Length: 238
Image 1 (cartoon, rainbow, N blue to C red):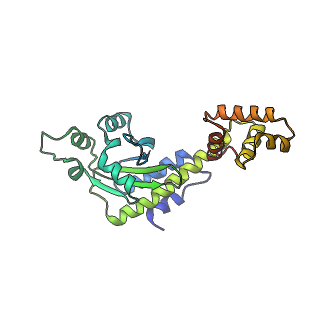
Image 2 (image 1 turned 180 degrees about the vertical axis):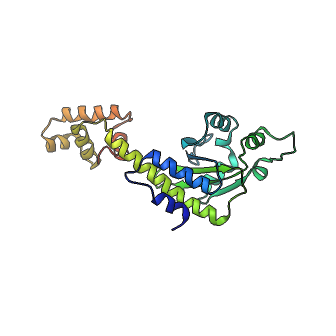
Image 3 (image 1 turned 60 degrees about the vertical axis):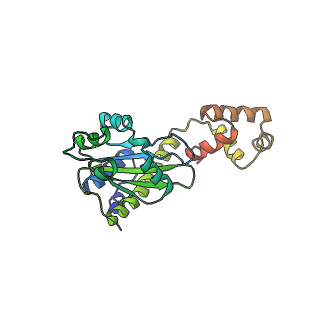
């Protein structure tokens, strides 16, 4: 097993976000990186969108600078992440024109220099549904090799999978739906109408509609179909 996935495989069960953060920090440090982040990647038809933070070890000051200077919507990076499934390895000199002796450097290059953020890698994770994420690593060292990039990319899939499992379990424990609301959503997920659900549960169609309306409101969903999809994704129907 590669070094990255092997490190994550040693995570103790049950998985927690705190434990995952510690493992990612150890993985980053082992490869000479000082900063890591998990971010979402906007879809290719989402014009003007930007990467958004999920988890990171960044200081608030660094995060604000990153966003203020437009790194989260930098076109070459977004184009590479949206259009391909391979890691994007970068260095500050090539990507942003960083030159320690140049007083006319761009604000982006100066920011990277001041924060000792001279190279890094974006490891995209494209989901089967609409979710696309990226593991972002950066630090003061030289760019990683192709072999190291592949290893980190494999680790990124494990990291996002473990994070999804952690949040799924947390959502399931914090399920806001009543037992009846869950029953109605489960049957609606099978394509049953309110009338058919009422017959199965020996309740009136009006009562079933009330349960589904309440569930839709609790989930902040736009309609019944949306509520069913959200409840399933969040683990509420398990």
